[in-house]
Length: 89
Image 1 (cartoon, rainbow, N blue to C red):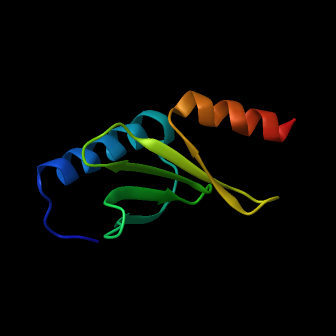
Image 2 (tube, rainbow, N blue to C red):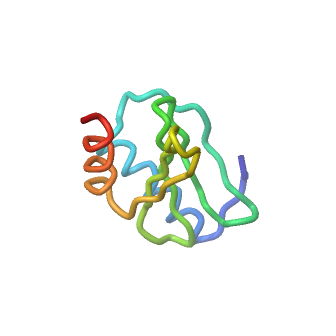
């Protein structure tokens, strides 16, 4: 994990942790990281969901579609939840 953060990276980290606390508090964290190529600060959770932010912007959620092996991106927690509900049906 990156050990020093500029302002926007620190804001990204705060937003990611806020989203985790609000929606996934208590869920096991598999990895916390910073992607040097994309600039994303992220938390990868054991449930297969990743929460990320870049340059202090709002968080996005990633999940892998195991049927297509495609990584899907959602701009909101609600959009992610609707996708997961539809997949469960």
